[in-house]
Length: 416
Image 1 (cartoon, rainbow, N blue to C red):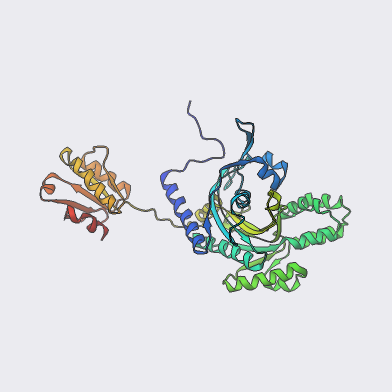
Image 2: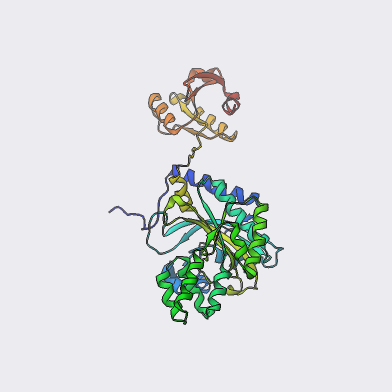
């Protein structure tokens, strides 16, 4: 019986891995250029880490199990909680702000669909520091730079402030412990499910409609004049810094609320219209999580990019990706030059060139076809007569031109 891979997982063949590594490295380069430093956390954690953040119901959505020591363990469903746990354990005395980024696998037990898998990859960044608009602006600036750096052509950056709806719910008499569930419904625009929850707390129909209308408010910076209170002041300051960064195409969306209970202020999302209904590729905002996990109160802001989903968006936009080519493929003409072919391949590799060598003992015609199939720029043909003169033949695989080159000068010739 042929054993299949588990549902919701994928195998990545060499061509796809090269593409994924290329974009992964772009994310790293941009993050480093913004002064962020990379961290890594365990792929499994104590289940309590995630139930403390998201509540006991999260167990139904994650891979949670008891290990051989009787400990409740979970494969991480996201990385933010792990980073804050690491901060509490090992980094709380370091100078701030801490600007951290990460990339890794996450796991959620949910129904697989386009761009959504049970094993998926998440890139994210967190800033642990001062509760000011500069910090949020820095996080948003990095997110925008990452999306642009990957080459996504069409995307929408939406910014909101969760304090607006939290204040409105408090004014309507909704208890703070019930607000989180309602915000989750409003975040997903599930108005039919949010309405009964609001009615159960005595909210009148006209007030419910007014609340729903607020979540539909979206537009440009002209909306800032209509947003009052502390959220309005903060957003005005935030947009001054975003302007300074040159980030101008931003939609103010009061319906961007990100329903998780630990978000406290500015929230933002990036959407790729080419993905249709499931178009969010990045989401984040400012939050308080350290004290929930047993640490000191500390302001944090950050975001996560769904790496698989943003790659799907690039694919939908037919983004061109040029795979790297081998510099050379070394071909012995016979058994009498095979060992020397391997010495030549080793010398070229030590010189920093990407080189493959025939392992299958093919006849020359078939070996040349295989070299062409690998996409190598040059074939290095190692013949006995040429070797006797201290030379080899190099063949340009695109033009077909051939020339004799001294073995001692081969690396320099291929590099040129």
